[in-house]
Length: 130
Image (tube, rainbow, N blue to C red; front, side, top):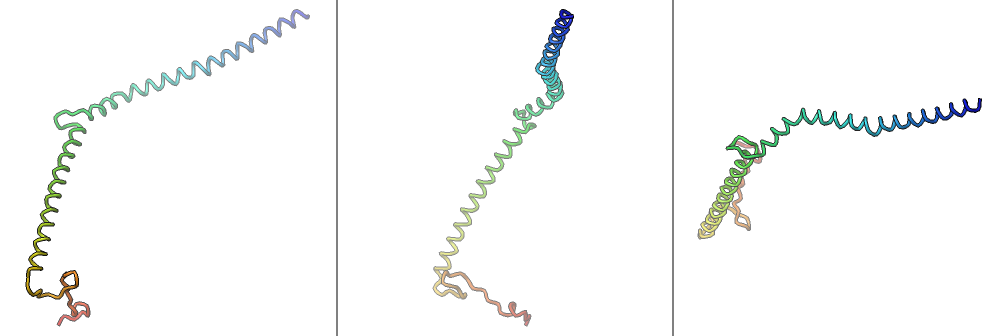
């Protein structure tokens, strides 16, 4: 009976070791490989879309996203130059108007100390239309 018991315990230990080894192979080899394979399948489905997106960033005679961005950048630069030129023109006009106003011997309109014209319509404040 002793030999049978010893053999049974040895078989149980071997079976336990095989179960632990099988679970370890399943858990640390097969499941990760399955996840990698599944991810590769999903990536292969998404690859044509990623390739199309990548092509949008290469210039191709005005039809790509890159060409549109470059075109918009050039237009904005031109618009900025026009705005800068207009603001310089407006500043020059303001300076010329100030020189003309200061050149007048008698300032015909009521003004404050900074020579800004004071417009005072009392009938508007009271609401009288007469």
